[in-house]
Length: 227
Image (cartoon, rainbow, N blue to C red; front, side, top):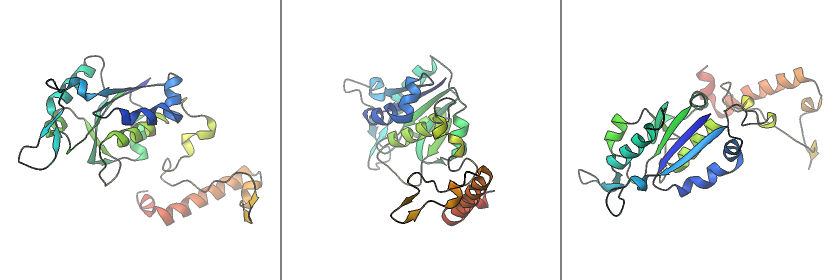
């Protein structure tokens, strides 16, 4: 069973994304465990502080090394972890290949940054991998962590039904997905391509392959260059 432990200073942000739809279904089916940890439980002093001023005088607060260290060590005392992942804007960009790789893990820690970021010593000595969801900055790592968790969970065997199979998702074969249609076959003068109504699996598959290549060339040509 895959277990994902998420460390956050704002755990409430993760409640809804991971409790509903496919992640929530995976948990209820007993295929995945998700545990969100409030870093303030490891905070220092009467105010349970988890951040402090930045050395050097830069603006913004920095997550302190000690609370994060104590939390990660507490988790590691209970089980071995395949990865300790920091959601970092300057980390490696999340791809389908990374999601596929992480879905084979057994235990993962996701560390959500906040404020100005985390003390660099955490990245140097505790984090095993850093992942970004894009070249932009958001208020904290919670939403990126939920996104990463969802991309991993949906790949765990038994989580998806045939109707939502991950095998035909965009990027699994290095291409974006072809167009998809459903009933009615004609609406407002807009018709579904005849080949999809033909009932001929060979013709349909050939059309889908052609459309996937064409759409990738138009929208994400860099993917074709990587092949």
